[in-house]
Image (cartoon, rainbow, N blue to C red; front, side, top):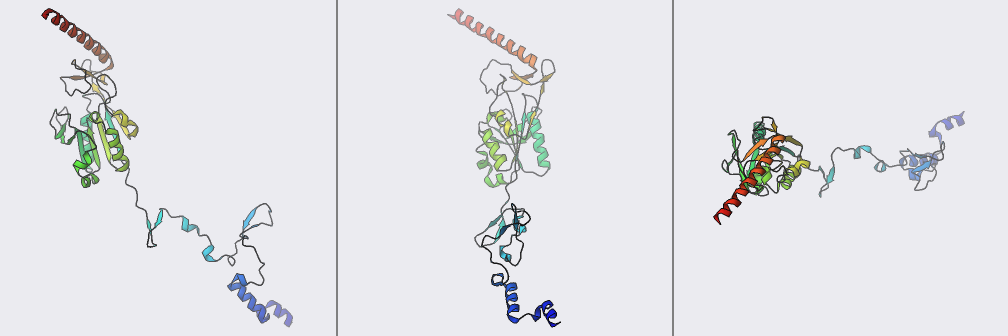
Length: 300
């Protein structure tokens, strides 16, 4: 009977045996009962499937500082260590900007659309600034004016790269929206829009002619189409038939690309009257040239 009680009660074990068990609980390295394993025994072959690996989940054999804790790797933000050993989140990148392009022939309402967008942004509490080319002096240098007489103050500049310096670096940082009128006259349009939207987080609204009087690309306006968030193609009304006008017809005989003028120089026309108008203008040019030749011959 005494032997049975000793077998069932661990306190009846000899003192040396009890001491070994206590050591094995406190420190597995001194276990007298655990088999010796190699340093690579973290993974071992499972007896059920000799070709698969199983992980030994024995808390006595793996101290707490060696156990993997998944929560250490599930942070939402990237963490960076500072020099003093503390942790802080990295600063978030600046908000991404936008580029919106408004194109069309002359007298299509491009400047009017730009002004409405700017006024809407101002009403929403955003800081705005408007730029136009210093080449356009039709209605003064300090404002942009629509053909209907609406106006807003603006910065008249020969190029866009000088805007940040002239506007002021601190004021530029607080700026939310930049409007650009008569964009076809700025050679650095692409670089400025890309920098302002991609790196400075500005909303840039661009208005300009997409084609000249020859229906060819005018300036850099079409170059920023791949950068744009939206593109709006406006149309005017044909002065001859009243249909939708997509093109600008020059009335005069000048051939230079950049010729700033209003209704005295240009008119919006549909495709049919652009083609017929070009034919008429070419015929008129030939007649005028022939008259000049005749006059020169008579004077001789």
